[in-house]
Each structure stands twice: as C-alpha cells, then as structure tokens.
Image (cartoon, rainbow, N blue to C red; front, side, top):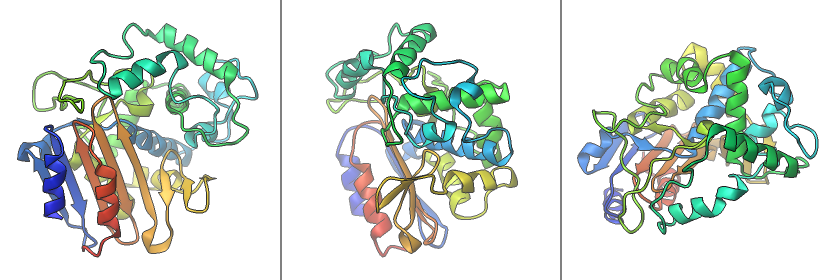
Amino acid sequence: MQAELSALAASADADLAVAVRGSDGAWMQYGSPDAARARRFEIGSVSKALTGSLFGVLIASGDVDPDAPVDEIHGERLPWRDTAPTLRDLATHRSGLPNTPRALFLREMATALGFSRRDPWRGVTAGAYREHLHAAARRARSRGRFGYSSMGVGLLGDALAAATGLPFEELVRTRLLDPLGMTRTGLDRPVTCADVVARPTSPRGAALPYLKDEMPAAGMYASTIGDLQRLADALIDTAPAGVAEGLRAATTVHHHLDEKAQLGLCWFLTGSGSTREISHSGGTWGSQAQFSVQPATGKAVVALTATHRRIDTFAARYLASDAR
C-alpha cells in the first residue's frame, strides 16, 4: 500500500492527504508533503453526503417530512413542468433538475479541464441563480428516474434551512458537524492562518479559483482527513446520540439504481453483507475527494487532493484487499 500511495503522490505536483482505517479500527495517515495531513481541502460533492446526513438527522428529530413537496417546505413556488419533487426526490437525484445551470455548463467544463483559470460563477448573483433555477424547473421532467443533480441538492439545502429557520451553514454546524467533532469543516476559504484551504490546481499545474457558487449544500465544503475520519468512525462504530439515528436514516436505501447500487439520502450504497459500502466522491475545479466506508469489515478510506488524481481506484483496491 505504501508503494501505491507514493505513486499516487507522484502523479501530480499538488498536495495529497490519505487516511485508511483497518478492520481493527486503527487509522494510518499519509501526506504528500507530510504537512498535507493537517491541511484543509475542498471536498466537492462529498458535501452532498453531509447534506444527506443532515437531512437524516432532521427526519429523525421530526423537523422535516421527507415526502413533503419542496415548494411547501421552501416557501417558494417554482414553475415545475410536472409536480414539485419531494425532499426525498431531491436527496435521491430524482428531481429532474440538471447538475448545473445550462448557461454555466461550458464555463464549468473549461475551468475543470484546465482550459480556463477564471471562476465559472463570476457575476452570478443570488438573484441571477434564482432565474437559472426557475428556468431549470420549467424544463424538469424526472418521472422518478435518477439524474445526478447538484441543483437538486442545492435546493434541498435551501429547503432544510427554511424548515428550521437557520442559515444553512449554521444548521449543518449545529446539528451535524459539532456533534461529530468536525470542527475544521466549513464553507469558509481563509487566505491565512492554519485553516487555509489547499489551492485547487489544474492538471497543468495552474492555480484555479476556489469553488464558490449558489449551491453550497451540493459542493462548497472544505474539510480535513481528520474530520472525515470522525464521520467514518460514526458510520462504522457508535455515533453521538444526537446524530446516530439520522445517520442510519441517511444510509438506508431510499432508491434502487440497479442490482448493484442504491441511494441513501445523497449517499451511494453498493454491495451487500461484508462488502456493503457507503461512499461519495467529489471534485471542484481542481480538487478531488473520496470517502468510502465498509461498516461490516470496519475498513474505510478518506483521500483528499488539490488536483485531479485517480483516488477512487486506490480506495476501491484497498477496500477489496486483504489488508487488515
């Protein structure tokens, strides 16, 4: 495994942090450079797993009804082509909304592929985003089918905030992150101090913008391998009383994708028995994240990098290996 980690680190000149948990519950951390083990990284769509976990916590506490139409909870009637999706539809990517606003797709692709160093969301105000959301709702047609959607999870986050009367960031912190001890996970991007976030880097080595959009619930969080280890431990072992039932609700099957994969509340669920896996991957313009746990074996992988690397294949090989 050490050889694989070294090869992974050498695949690009940007920070990398990895933590693997054995079946005995012990963690091993690796950093390239070593200081990267304490760095904060953008986690991209692993943010969705946090939002899904929060959703589970709010369901368990009775704060929200997962089958309520989103417009009823959010307090804003969107011009849906069909009926308004439920909160559960949003959390299982069955809203019919696209992954990103149509007008920003090419901008995002250019930055993600390293052809542009500009922020794809430049000039997009909250009001402009609402216009994009209304336009997407007019075209949305899901008919119960899966269609991966950051816009859908972004709307879910907005609805959960509206249901509780708390700003989304405060809601996640007080109901999920603080109880789990995830004190270095947040939406902030400080430019100095110990909590500075590793700068996303293109495959060509160019510094790219931090992700800052109008869908924070879907991809804007930054975290550390230490914080994500705490989440993995909570999913495998015993979670704090305030979140335990919610995590179980979030990682229960809510939609079947096919014979091999299902969806929890934003979480991807694969395998069964000893190979059952709870996971989510993520990426921003120049960062990647992988979070995978096997509750039955007690094994887990957390990998964070400031550029694009194939960290998902490393995680899969470790979980499938005989390593203890």
